[in-house]
Image 1 (cartoon, rainbow, N blue to C red):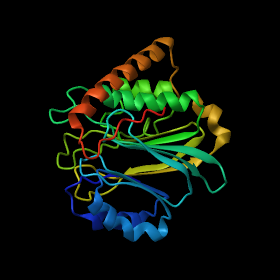
Image 2: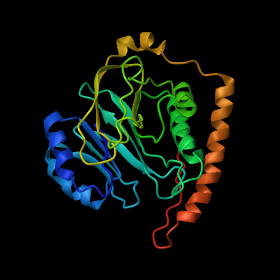
Image 3: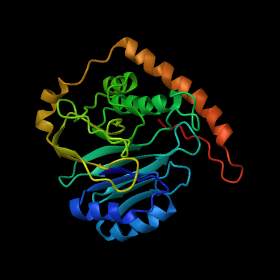
Length: 271
């Protein structure tokens, strides 16, 4: 389950009710701060593994898991106060897979003028997944639509699948405008997973709807499903490298603008 909760939203009980109703193995919350962290403490007996990054800058992030998390890390890839969570999960059959939780900065008058860092963060993780031949799931609010040039480029460079293709867009934003909604909350997965179900859940008072996705690990279908992944070209690789380098430059600039002398945190480009 992925839910951008909207930091000022106080309807914490609505999300907790959905978690109790659907009992997902994984819960990822975005824009979650200390208030949300305290409220979600009631689910922790059923979610013994967690990564908590409470922030009040609209980029807080929490991961709650019934599955063991192996060596989870919080990275600040491009901008000093925008985190992402990278971890391995151990499936019930013992298989270890990677999980990446992202919420890159969108282009807007109050954030970044361009989509440079958003694009670079997504592509940086996608490149890393491909270079290390990882079995992976990537999920979060990517602040971009599924059919954008960057998202399609990410799919080619990462070789991950979009489970919505051939089904529906699952438009998650904006809750209040039914005729102006976009698919901003995403999940992508390696071809060894098959989709059981994906659905938008009821509003919890945020500007985003939560999304619940059920995947099944079936390595025997990996070769067949890999045929659905677009082929990456040399030009794609060059474009990815250029966008990542541009994102690093822009990230340093934004970090300087957003820096707080009391708790400054340099971007940790570990990928």
